Image (cartoon, rainbow, N blue to C red):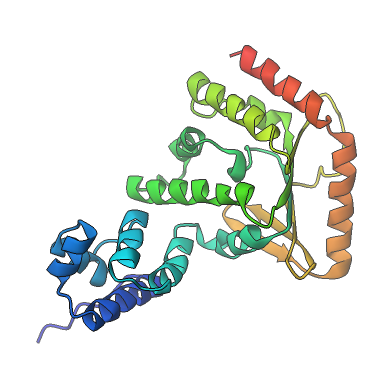
Length: 272
């Protein structure tokens, strides 16, 4: 006797599907009828309810409106969206989006919040092992969604120190980097973002030990996020956090100031 096929989808996807199915049933709608209200086919609704396909942002918004769900579908989708991020980063992104302050020092690459879509996509050209195109699409879309932090209310204060080496690494070629430089200059005009560059000509500084992100929580607790090679560590012990926070404070005094940093970025753009 054949065994029933095990549902290999994630718990978040199954939870979202169940919420959608319950609300649709409560409204007395068939999958086809709900699809018509959402401008989707019944097959598309069925695919989400059976976890055969993930719900897109457009699908989620249409279902919320069509079922007059009062935020229930949007709330369930929060956990679905979280799964678009790599597993090691899912905890961090929740902290980041609620944080009053985010302060990062970046070494190899431009910070995810400051990346253009083309730059983020080009990073996957060098992934080992290769990443499935559909997975790349989800990860890049999720990275772009993080930019909501820039315009969030209450306002988040953001500080970024980028190594000049990260800016000189031509990810995606001249065209991609040209737009990336332009975007960095645009970001630097934001009143809640301080963007600085650590020049390669500076032989030593306080953060030679590696990259970090210092996060302040809404409860005024300071944490430090460390990441490398697909692994991450959240530092919470006050004495360890204190050391790392002081290093970050020092590197801000050692890097180029924001005005000098923009000048350097524009010079690099002119060299393409």
